[in-house]
Amino acid sequence: MRYVLGLLSFLFALCAQAAQPGLIQWQPWSDGLFEQAKRENKFILLDLEAVWCHWCHVMDRETYGNPEVAKLIRAQYIPVKVDQDARPDISRRYEDYGWPVTIVFNSDGGEIVKRSGYLPPRNMLAMLKEIIDDPRPVIYPDVRILNVSDFSNQTLLDDKLRSELKQRFFLSHDYQVGGLEQQQKFMDRDSVEYAMLLAKKGDAKAVTMARQTLNGALNLIDPVWGGAYQYSTDRDWKHPHFEKIMQVQAEYMRAYSLAYLHFRDPRYLRAGEDIYRYLKNFLTSPEGAFYTSQDADLVKGEHGGEYFALDDTGRRKLGLPAIDKHRYARENGWAINGLAHLYAASGDKQYLAHAIKTANWIIQNRSLPNGGFRHDEVDSAGPYLEDTLAMGRAFISLYTVTADRQWLQHAEQAADFIDKNFKIQAGFATSAAKGVLKPRPTIEENIFTVRFANLVYQYSGREPHRKLAEHAMRLLATEAIALYRRTEAGILLADNELANEPSHITVVGHKDDPQAQALYRSALTYPSVYRRIEWWDTREGKMPNPDVKYPELPTAAAFVCSNKRCSLPLFKPEEIALAADRLNQ
Image 1: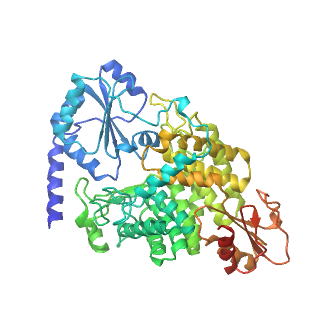
Image 2: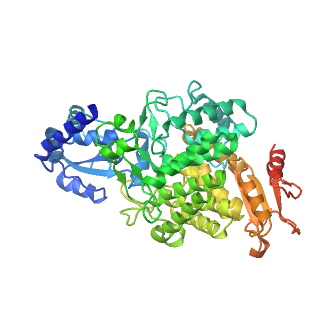
Image 3: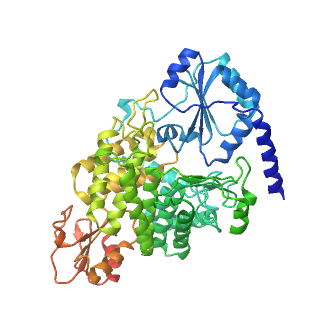
């Protein structure tokens, strides 16, 4: 009943607002805004929102729907609204503030103020009036703007910084309920992955950290439709925000697949399968590509708790929360990567088939010349690092699980495109565009660049890929960057992988040989967050990276190599994990 009353209340509010149409005429983002601001002697007000975000809807209704706020904006400001999913360059620049974020610029591009979260009408009016009275830009310290002299010359962390990051990693964990020690609870994928790496080496504390978080985050899986909610409030796992965004779906699917291989807890595999069930039923386009997100609210601005407590029939009677049907290359790359890991964990070929179908659609519809990818069907800016990076990670994962060399070729082309288009003096920038807001590097993108490029190097043996990884790592090894915020686990993963060889398993045998197929399937289930799995069918010519010389035997065999040593030939699938554990100690 309360939900129905809330719905009626909102509809009445819509009718009232309809009597005042066009309160604010929002413009899209462009560099031409700054020339317009100079001509009209106005400020630029940027409302950076997420289309799935509850508080963004509330702010649209309550704040920007307020006549007094709208009148002041029309008089003194150029209002600009940007969907952060549509513009990774702007989104990454202000991601630390969360959504919605409000930024006011002067006509030179200077940031006068930056405000995080919902601003009620009174607060917004006060802020806008203060800017008019005193338009001096506020100086916001930003560690990501480095002087050249600050940029590390090291390709790895120094021992002191590595030790500091490890200490901070262990201190960041909430040992009561799992997750990071903070109000919002979600599965930080890098923290869980790094904990699994340490757990594999026998660290009991890391086992506890990983299992606590993995178990807690199971509460964020929608029991009705599947899929993962973004996070929970109240320092527990019981108060979710109901939006379902692709990065969460894809990375949870990947993390739970890895966790299943490590801990053999069937709940983790079911979690991955439930996420795919949601993606298949709600976020899959007719062509097989993936949509971007589903809204947190059925009625925009009305909390969805009562709605999501209903069963499938009850929900569908009221309708479905809006789905953002953009098919971005970045989001699809994330999804393909997650599906490849779910296939490795489960052996269920439907996941691999969907991943390959999606990859082919993105190649056909989002490709740029020379191996890169655009974000959408048409981009107003870009290209953006994350589209090519996400697809590159997807390609290397597809190569791992299929041994089909076309995917390695696509991954190499993606790495080359990144090197040519996004490299700056300090790491790799979010965008190749050169606008008023100069492109910057971000920590997360450079973590993934290190890990992706280094893995491409391990598979290809091409030195430029190694150098690409090292260039990104020099940014992360800079003390001001490494200690900036809770990215310790990701930086430690990148550092570890650049410094060490992956778990390396190679099957030698024809790809139509059932014994070779069984050996390769077993290799894919070996639990390691950093691995190189290959299949040498001599009919395909030499290996892409022939750094190990394998004998040709009359029957299919597997070899495990680590630390410059290789096992004897292994003929039984169950022998692979035992040999890998021995050599990786």
